[in-house]
Image (cartoon, rainbow, N blue to C red):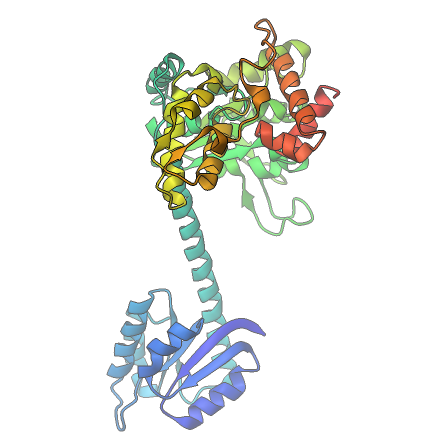
Amino acid sequence: MIDSNVLVIDDDDDILLSARLFLKQHFKQVITCKSPREINVLLSRNEIDIILLDMNYQKGASDGREGIYWLEHILSIDKDHVVVLMTAYGNVELAVQAIKKGATDFILKPWENEKLFATLSAASRLRQSNKKVKKLEKIHSSLQKDLNRQFENILGNSQPIMQLQNTLVKVAPTDANVLILGENGTGKQVFAYELHKLSNRKNQIFMHVDLGSLNENLFESELFGYAKGAFTDAKDDKPGRFEMAEGGTIFLDEIGNLSLPLQAKLLSVIQNRTVNRLGESKERKINVRLITATNMPLNEMVNKGTFRQDLLFRINTVELVLPPLAQRGTDILVLANHFLSTFSTRYHKSILNFDEKAENVLLNYYWPGNVRELQHVVERAVIMADGIEIGVNDLQLSPQKFGSNSAPIQTDMGLEEMEKLMVQKAIDKNKGNISRAAADLGLTRAALYRRIEKFNL
């Protein structure tokens, strides 16, 4: 049974009966009608995949002009409609002309059942393919709009941000490999995408790969692709992320999580600018701009032997270090007001600003989750607020994370020690609830479990 709905339009009752009796054995649904004037109603009320359309309706008519007219009408409603014409032998030349106007195929009357089935089966495959392409186009368009909105600007005018923006302008037009360092939630992906937007590759793809969430067993097949038969489920050839990013930018996030064997494989690709798909020996050249990011102390990891020094040399031609939100001063209010405007529009609220006390709270909060946490706090506040201002109570911030109430931060503490302390605090605060602790830290559960194991907590 083919999962497609067929609409048959013909003014001959015998044709309609014959088509319905045969096609209902093979297709999900068969709808018939005598007049093409019912097309609009039928298409609006039903999900039609294939339209089987006669070319003549008026008595004595044989020139097929009606069929051409209704074909054009159907395609004006949706150019992706799949229309198969029914025609007598003498109208074959006209049917060929109709195909040039957008018809998918034609079938001669009286038809042979096998021929009709084969024609409509092919039409069904075409329709399903069109639907998949249309869905992918919509997803791509939606993602692109979201990306353009989300990364439209790097907001803020604090000294660290101004320096980073200056560096971006210099580095973006080059193909230099860039390593972005910073705590979770500081905006590493934002800066990576801004680099891409300012580069000569801006009209090509920006491929984001989260290495932290990538299963180690799938690393090679995902990044480098595979050949048909390379493993049990490899039923077709598939390009990897590097090949799919050809001509554009590939952003490898959480690179510090890679094991040493995987680091070696990635280093080979970066050095040789080629990939080998799993299951084949052919080398494929790649032309991509590489940006990587991590919140882990790679230099310390090199000293401990957990990160390859030669790989670090390769990925950090230029290094960007993003400051924690708590060190960005009044940028906090710039970002907070940006998020306030965004979420007020999204949730149809008329909230104009933060009151003075709320602003002071925002400026004095520790922000362990950085910009990501600020975004979530403002979104929640917009949802919960009743008036036209956001007040302190709307923010619902934990008093344990304010500078005046929290333990002093050791300035001589290494990044790894600070990370361990933050993980422990998040777990303690949430009484061992890993999901909530991970959310506070801006991590996935899997990433938090890796850190718990790493720090032996």
